[in-house]
Length: 270
Ligand SMILES: Nc1ncnc2c1ncn2[C@@H]1O[C@H](COP(=O)(O)OP(=O)(O)OP(=O)(O)O)[C@@H](O)[C@H]1O
Ligand SMILES: [Mg+2]
Image (cartoon, rainbow, N blue to C red; front, side):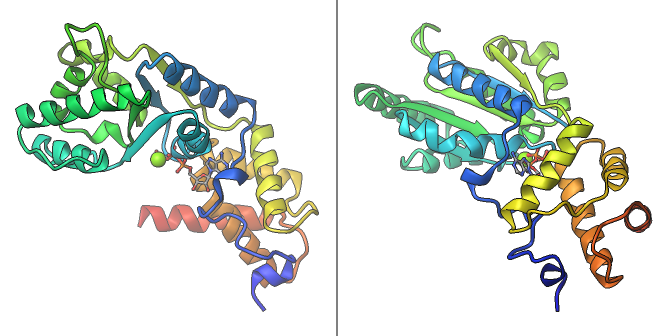
């Protein structure tokens, strides 16, 4: 018997394999999703930052179908460590173009493509996840994508997503011309204590369990240990469920959570 059976769960409740339609959008995350949609409606570009695991990529997933249905063409990339030539090649492939390796060829290919899309009234959106890892020479060129026809048009909307250091990097003098073109600056905050409780409940419900499995002081401890980062919460909550099942208890209590956190910290510091 697995821990899932002990709690009547039909699937692992804290897996990252969550369907787009099941993503949780409390008001704080809905506001970020709306901010993104507003920016795209204006064909503007965006920078979105947040600490690791607070749900940045999931917010992108939560809006992707709506945006595609509204006549945007989304291209998602998380290969931010590529050098400039490979980056251009990849962008071409993602846009369905023959790969171009030089900046000149690239701009020619992309701009003809984008003009074609404009005739079809499709606006391209290039989502660059993990953008804090971008090489400086790639970053140096990104603003050119946003400066087209004597800076009267953007070729596409750029959505740069990354850790808070991305914003610090963009604010450096060297990157100011790119940063000044990213008019919409969004941030995802870590979960508040009430959010943590709501998130746990929602994910358990999606996995088939309607009853409260976590004692409230256990949730408080989980919240404190994860500082509102959902990926850490997923890992610790799943470990606490397994441990509770091993002890043949019905409810996840604070002592179990404390032990799980201790083991996790020990493992991390090894
Ligand atoms: N809106 C959401 N609904 C349900 N689960 C979510 C949501 N947002 C995040 N999660 C959970 O938290 C995990 C981490 O979220 P996500 O990958 O979006 O974080 P991130 O901010 O992109 O992290 P990183 O900075 O490491 O890329 C997901 O795998 C998922 O399990
Ligand atoms: Mg991410």
